[in-house]
Image (cartoon, rainbow over all chains, first blue to last red):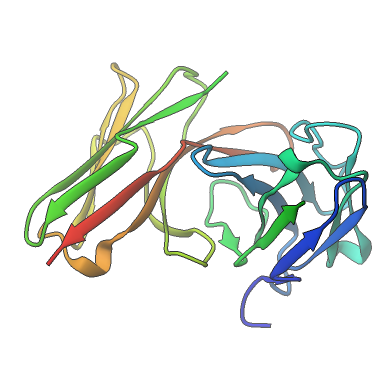
Length: 114
Length: 115
């Protein structure tokens, strides 16, 4: 595709439910990032995938959060037993994975936990 | 622990004026400093970036000024236009092993340019 695609664009869920957020990176990009954007809190790093290397999970806020990247392409961020404080925009970005370079962001998934 | 501090949180400028957004960092391992621009409903997009071996970089109306000794950098938008109204994020990156250059973002500045 022409850019990073995220789905769904909006997700409303009830507290305690599990949610899955999907990211399709730009074809050929080996690096994939998940960030969380909360009001007034900027962009919070969650997890980073680079090729076949072990992912950098240092930003995941709790063990309720997990992510996987299948076949080096599509990634899914899963939040189990959602809480109201999980409400935020979840942004995915990809890059060529060559170092200090441009990140291409998707438009994000707006998650609302009621 | 906030590694990149950004100010102001919001900024209102008249059309034609100069917009200035400031960032400060603590970690001297940071070696790449980009600015991202985000419009409502969209993801951030790279605007301009600088490395610490230069003190200034200019691209059109946008200039980054970098002060390595003070560990500060700023974005200047000359002749600000209503179309520049957006949220601006500064960021800093450091080598984290392999080809990992993880970006740490500031909290953002909401810029409004009045016509």
